[in-house]
Image 1 (cartoon, one colour):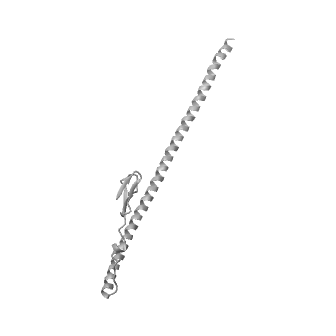
Image 2 (tube, rainbow, N blue to C red; image 1 turned 180 degrees about the horizontal axis):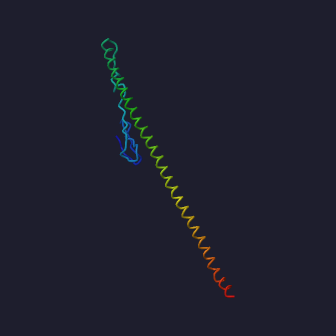
Image 3 (cartoon, helix red, strand yellow; image 1 turned 60 degrees about the vertical axis):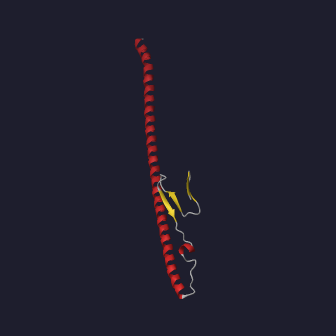
Length: 145
């Protein structure tokens, strides 16, 4: 039985599969399934090699079981490769997003620094203009005297 919760998918022990979210969206998943590889599922639990016919049948069953196990291993390897690829892709996306965030922050800081410098120049110009304006009446009085 599979149940979806806020933290992901929970799979009961009686099942052999689960969906793993591998992207930024909950629908971007990889389904993990492992076929049953027990001795009874492979058909090797009741082999009888007491006779030549039984031994020959056992060899055929063992060949089939080896092929089944090899196929299961190949499927697991392919799934691992898919997970590793998605992991690498997500790491690259995270790195690119952090670089973009840093670039945006740097632009904002430079813009604000330029704005602060412009404001400081305007204040200094205003102070200088006010100082000259305050000196004008005194210069005028000196001329009249």
